[in-house]
Length: 159
Image (cartoon, rainbow, N blue to C red; front, side, top):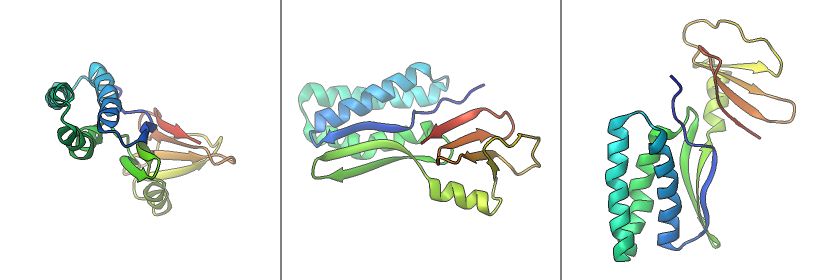
């Protein structure tokens, strides 16, 4: 069974308007729960989205910002692939929410053989010893791909 992960990249950007931030995060969560097979996680997310919809209907900016700042980050955590995380950056031109790669942790774990094996681009995949959970390949252009070491399934790729 393939695990459901959120896509890497921006979820919302360029605004500080509470209803716009909340809307973008809610749309992504709705998309994820439609494909999720974990009923408990779907139910938890549905309840939070009901609260979001109520806050939108009431025009309650304070409740919308609680959804954005507190609720949504927790809801996205189970949808983050290994070595990815939900991040928020606020600047003068607005707030960006994204699923980002934790390259420092990934490369540290590869360097010290902590569950990650790094292979050269084009190097053959083989059966790995116990304790190797992930394979990371960085090509000569800096593109990074993370694979499951048991199934060789691509978990994510980024440039």
